[in-house]
Image (cartoon, rainbow, N blue to C red):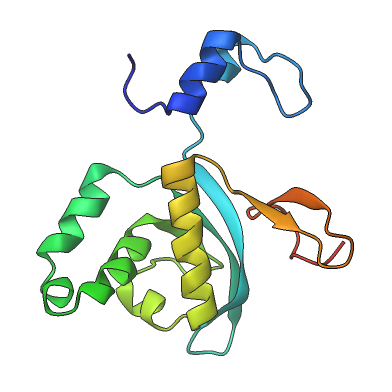
Amino acid sequence: MRRGITATARAQEAEGAVGGDGARESGAAADRLRTEFPFELPRGYVDGAGTVHRTGVMRLATARDELVPLRDDRVRENSAYLSVVLISRVLTRLGTVEEVHPGIVEDLFASDLAFLQDFYRRINAEGHTRAAVTCPACQESFAVDLAGGGRLGES
């Protein structure tokens, strides 16, 4: 068994990889593991100059990303701070902000932090950014891609 590949990916590999349009992908394309996921924050990070940064990229977490924050004194004093340190380690880009550090994550709106925590869980535990939703008007169930290009409810 190869390291760094999910059970779902192994199952797809065993059956032959199938792309989003149902077509089988070539062997090289099927072997690639997606490690970075773009996103758009619901509100956005507002920097000191008043610029709003809404788009970003989160990478898959490593074991080190989850272990190192446990040695952080801020996390030892307040376990809720773990998510702040962890999220700051896996954000590779947030708008034009060059370095994402815990101070940046601390200044996010609560709804944006909740979005990133859910996004982290989805890509690291579930291996995708899709969420099952139900239309409140017609009760139709469907999936939306949280990393997709556009905000929910907009076309």
